[in-house]
Length: 259
Image 1 (tube, rainbow, N blue to C red):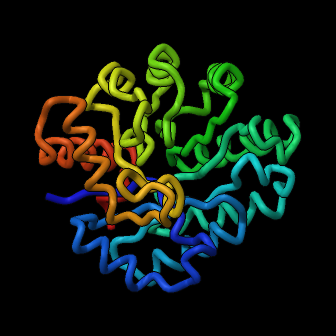
Image 2: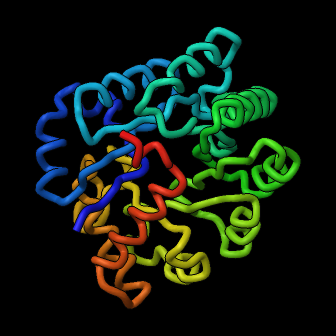
């Protein structure tokens, strides 16, 4: 039984650059592949470097909406260069964040659209971050449906079942992490409304560690805990969850099967 962590940040400073224990723990936990996701240009380059050091590591270069203000022609050119790497599986994470508002709405729109264009031009899916932005994200994606030809992932999905149906009609998959294990998270009905064919496992590490490790630095080895919770919600075996989530990840992130 093998798992995939489709959204991690082993490029985060919290790990101090020492990833050997993390990858050993992954192996013990049955996680054979991890996708490290960029949140700015430096972290995107770091994610690429990690993919070159570890066989099971892949990456997505991109600029998070918090750092949208940094996006310009030079940054986009570098992300495009990174996207040509054989272990780059998507562009991301991109989108909207109106909780922190670290970049203006105009800056976020520009960065989101330009990176969607880049993903489409490279024949890649993209990874969406959406916080306090459901209506804006849906409208934005609907207006740019012509750029969605290779699917996208709604990472750490936290919106409604109704919104999920709209995202799915546009080509979305959905990943869930440690939040589904939190008391009173109430994610079960949303997961079941989406169904087994569109879900994936993620950690968003070093953040959002699942129970009983909540508050600790997270790592990809804890994907199994998330899969166990999904199995409980759907009333199936953890083995079936592992099989389905891996199958879904390989369908969206097709380059996972080409390396």
